[in-house]
Image (cartoon, rainbow, N blue to C red; front, side, top):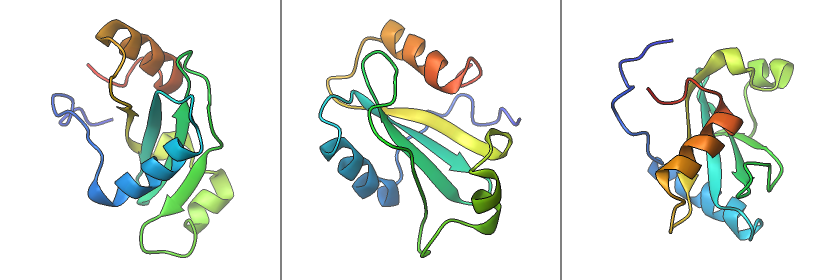
Length: 113
């Protein structure tokens, strides 16, 4: 995995904002949305609770496409193809220690270094 973006804070892209807002509207108890960008340009997103548990169904989509790619249809967006992943926190965001704890639970220990 390339670490050249390790210092750069990952942020929501404009085209992801509407999807995140829709997920949050359907998940009133959510404190954030996990955003996973795959190497095929498909995306996986889901709301998370304050305990770091799923607070919505996982949404998979691909920008400007009617459906996800054939590879994602076969492997359901396998973790080995994850290009970037992060949590978009609802404001006010939890403190940094809680963010790190939830991030580790949801994304694993190699999310930020």
